[in-house]
View 1 (spheres, rainbow, N blue to C red):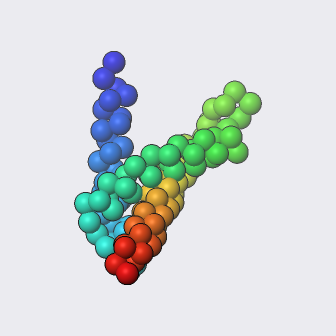
View 2 (cartoon, one colour):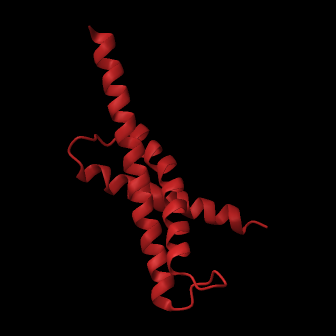
Length: 106
């Protein structure tokens, strides 16, 4: 009963750590609590989408990943998806907020 909640908490922790590392390496994005929060929100759909696409591409007819390499590949795909989804949402937020702040400062 609590397993989905525990997995959600583990995902939040993992995506928060990823959100502290990845945006710090991008010079355009400053490391703020808001950016990390937006990264975590964007990381969940990114990981789900990449995991789903990986499963569709590499699963057998019964929708199972049979080899160890396939399972590890799914985790790598979800990590890449989390990074892509999180950074895409942070980039959109920085771009929209930056435009709105420039327009209001005139």
